[in-house]
Image 1 (spheres, helix red, strand yellow):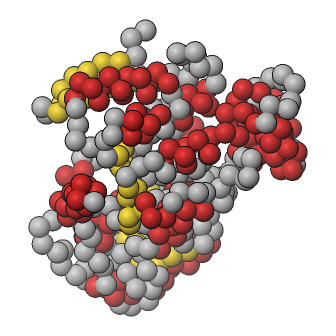
Image 2 (cartoon, rainbow, N blue to C red):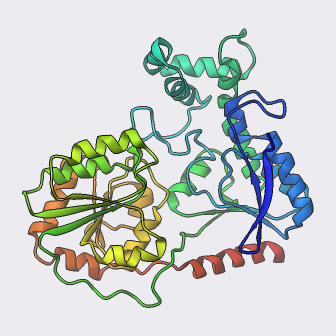
Length: 399
C-alpha cells in the first residue's frame, strides 16, 4: 500500500502520510509507531528537501512522531511546536484514566500508562486483571522491561515503548527553537516533565470573531435556552449536562446539543437514552464555523461540561466574543478564560448536581446573566494570533 501522497489545497502543497497501526519500516510496536514513526520521519525528510521551508511549525505529532522534529533540526531549520492537547507527555493525549477520571500524568516509569494500555486493549480476564493490578506492580514491570531485565513475555515490546515514550518525546521537544503554549496549565505540565522552561512562550489561541464587539445581552429568555457545542464523546461530558438538565423544573429550559452524531455511535445511543426523559432536548448536528455567531445568539448560556483537563476549548473564545455566558467544568485550562462569578460560572467536573445548581442560579437570580455577559472578554482574533507567531519566528531569526 502506498502510504504517501502529495496534492494541493487552495494552492497550498499538502504532503499526506496515511497511517495504520500495523508493522511498517521494521517497526512492530503499535505504541512506538504513534510517537516515533520512522517511515513518517523519512517521508518528512524528503518533503523538506523538496519544499525547502524557511522554518517548521508543528501543531500535532500523533502518528507522525517526534522524529519529524529531529529531521527539521538536522536540516538546521528553526522548528516550533504548539501543543493542542497533552500528547507530548500522555499516550492518550488527554490525561484521562480508564474510568474517565483525570490523570495527573505518567509515573516515573509510566507504570500507570502501562495499566491504562492493558486495560484498554486487552479483553476478558487480562483486561480485568490490568484494571486491578497495583500500580507498584505495573511500575516495576515497566522499569525492568525498559532496562531489558525481563524475559520475553506477551506485549513486552509495547510495554517497553510506553516506558521509553516520555523521555524520547521530551528530548526532541528540547531541541525545538520555541514551544508556543496556549495556557499556564499546559506550560506547567511540560516543565514538570522536563521541557526547558526557557523554550516556552505562552500565547492563547485566536478565533475568528466579528469585526466589532457583540452587544451586551439583555435578560435571558423564558424558557432558558441552554447550548452544548463540541465533540460528542464521553470525555466531553455531555451526559453530565443532560443529567443536570433533566433535574430542572419541567418547561423551564430548552437544551440544544450541537455535535457530530456519527463519531461515537455507542455514546450517542447513551445520550439519546438519557435525553428521552425530556421533550425539550434537541440534537442539532453540526454547523459550518461561519455560523457560530448565529448559534451563540440563539442560546442564553453555553455549557462546557468537560471531564478532562482541556487545552482551552476554542468554543469558549467564541462564546466570549458573542457575550454569551458560560457554565463550565472547573479545570485550569478553562478557568483561565472563564472567571467564576465574573464572566461565567464554574462547577466541579463530573458533578451534575453542581451543574444543576449553577443552571438554577441563572433561572432564579435576576440580573446574573446580564452581569456575566457584560464582563465578557473579547478574545484574540486569528489575525492577532498569527501576528504573535510571526513575532516569535522573527525573534529567533534575529537571535
